[in-house]
Amino acid sequence: MCPKSTSTQKSLDFKKNMKIKIAVGVALFIFWAVVVAILVSAMVTHQNNQNKNLLGSSNNSVVAPIVVAPGQEIVLSSAEVAKHNTAQDCWMIISNKVYNFTSFLTVHPGGAYTMTPYCGKDGSQGYQTKDLSRPTNHSSTAYSMLAAYYLGDLNQKITGTQLNQNVQNAQQAPALFGGGDREND
Ligand code: HEM
Image (cartoon, rainbow, N blue to C red; front, side, top):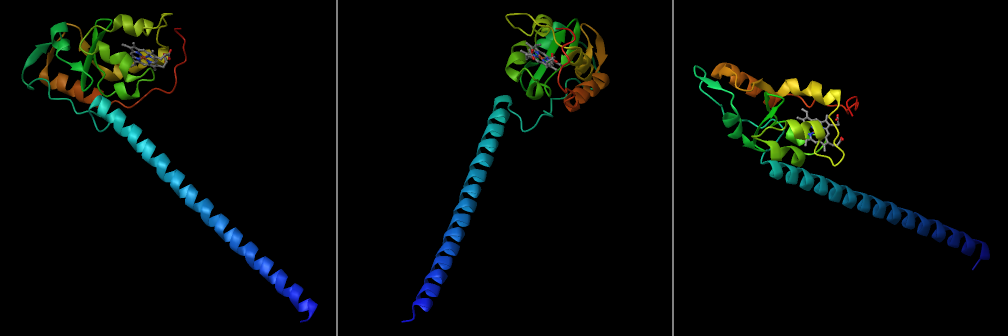
């Protein structure tokens, strides 16, 4: 056999082998990329489901029950606030004003768990100290967010129509925070 044709044959075989190796390498890379993508998306979905379960809702706009008939009037007393003491229906008193933070819990930068103990209660002190060992007030950004969740003044008499409207507004309040400026720290 001609030595030249043998070496040509070897070189062709070598190229063929290289092509196969590259193809296998690319296929393996794609395979693992797909596996990792599936795992990551499964983990994200799992985490989201856990957060939903924690708060018993499928999104941030928790639909609160209609509080009072439109024609009726009620007083926003601390006893009234106390009826809304769960993460699914969370009213709170801060500095003699009543708020509905139900939709805010899931987006609170300090976590829902720091706020839920105050659902149905006066959270003024918790709000002003963040319940930290070194008491730290909320920033002016946080203070400016309160208005979106306002229902009325403590012990204010309010009509069902107005209250239901305020509850609705609070439920739909956008997640307004964009990082505190710590002015009040
Ligand atoms: C009432 C009980 C509350 C407690 C115990 C509490 C606690 C906390 C904690 C521990 C942090 C994280 C630590 C830090 O950033 O310094 C935080 C951050 C924050 N919280 Fe609260 N929070 C409460 C209510 C609220 C409310 C009602 C709002 C607004 C409507 C709010 C808005 C924020 C904001 C915007 C931040 C980011 C840091 C800042 O701007 O001060 N929190 N909170």
